Length: 446
Image 1 (cartoon, rainbow, N blue to C red):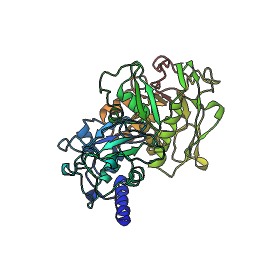
Image 2 (image 1 turned 45 degrees about the horizontal axis):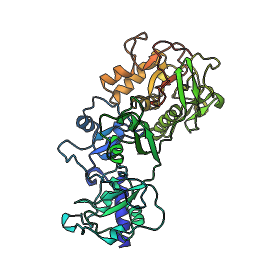
Image 3 (image 1 turned 90 degrees about the horizontal axis):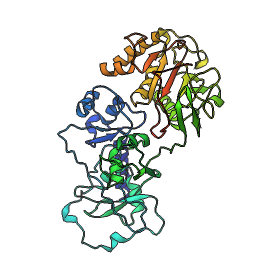
Image 4 (image 1 turned 90 degrees about the vertical axis):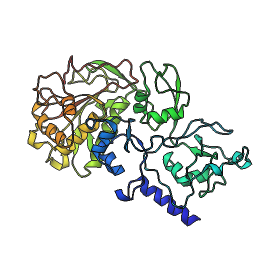
């Protein structure tokens, strides 16, 4: 029995991490919730499909995806109702919502017997009421449905079989019954969130890096549309709650409860006392550099100069950088002294377009930036590389000012004088910062 269980756990791990070749993979689940750092190419590779298939199945014109966005990873002809959880509060339980879905492919061990209606238990079964005496972690109950297997339930709900066995005394991994209730622990911290005016499930999901489907499962009485301000939602998320707040405009604003920019192997901060931002700003900077490191592990690090002062407001040598949403960052270049790229005039041929575009794409594809200011001459190599990597004409028009001229009104990556030696990124207002104001069209000053 122990040997069979070990093999089964190994099979689940291999499937979950995509270590089987495409021909050996089990059919993937229908929906995938986009995670930080994801790109269509990475998702396609993970599930053994093509980027074109992802675009076709999801009606996408280009590569822009958002954290929390749900993507179909099987054609429309596939069954579109995967097994879901039914939540019931039981004595000793602390949550009445289903566990989070996982992004791994559902696997079924050949030796497992799927649950069938014929296996349904009597109305009352004393064994079903027995629970471990020790206090439980936060979690939910799952009611077994016809066709379920233990490994399929585990993968679907983001846990492993060993965890289910640990928290469900007397559970037989080779035989589960329709109607049987399993306790599923939730490892992510619980959050009780009050819905604000203007919130939507999609925005809340993206903010907390979960999916809309998960929120609906955790809150069975909530409807997809018509979310009411003031309502409390239960979420499970690893994203920390933000106390920071960007107030006003980047060139006439302030910052409360600032967060310091954390360290990362791909950058060095010139002056930590001038490297504060909103929690979202510092996370988005670090997350994007982590994407670069994952895609291009060997390479130079860059220098980061100023974000904002600890309390925002006027910052020496700048007219912007006042509200915790701006950052000055050196370019990735092909040849940098001592493997560190500092500020210095950069020619188009010197840009390391692979790394620089990976950084830009991490921000642009997630809708995290209001503007990226660079010299107009440096836009062309990045534009051409982005096009070679699959950016659509619509995305290129949205993302780049080039080739429409340096005075054109549109384009997130846009010209500003004296930006040949570094880029200036300005992030969007966080959803929770209601006094934050966008305003790059009206003024920008370094």
